[in-house]
Amino acid sequence: MVPANVKPGDFGLVHMGGDAGKWIRIGQWLNGSGFSDYEHAFIYVGSDTIVEAEPSGAHITKSHYSNILWSSGIINPTDTQRLAIVKAARSYVGTPYSWADYFSLAARRLHIPAPHLKAFVASSNHMICSQLVARCYADAGCPLYDRWTGYVTPGDLCQLLQLPDRR
Image 1 (cartoon, helix red, strand yellow):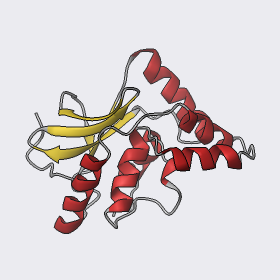
Image 2 (image 1 turned 135 degrees about the horizontal axis):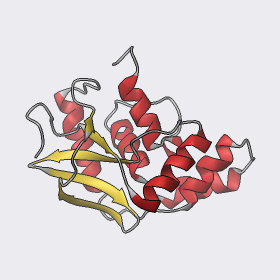
Image 3 (image 1 turned 45 degrees about the horizontal axis):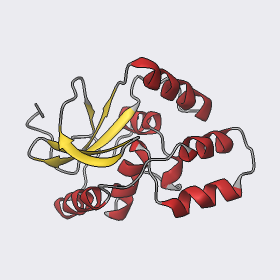
């Protein structure tokens, strides 16, 4: 069940259990995002549905998560931007997921020059969940960061929602 204050275009973050969640937490720590309790992100598109990127690719599904950290009331896009965020999220359904994105994040954090890896990730149109959220907001004209969306992790989104100087 989606809370009444959540609007289409808001994003949510959830904790992932199991080995996948553990590896994402470690990866986020290595990336400088800390040991966030949130390892997965998605966009709410209305009618209890979300768009999320998973290893099987980006898809639209009914919201089935609990204990969600929502961007509602923290990140406040205009109504026009919300429509654009939802439109962008729906347009990315079917977009493949790539583990190369994680290698690109690690190379950046470890200061390993990997311009070919970044170029591959940028040109491949693959996205992990947090990149999907950041890209949808950027496409709608309300970027969450002033850096390339390929360098955004779920932990970064969590930190954004927990900043004292919120948007």
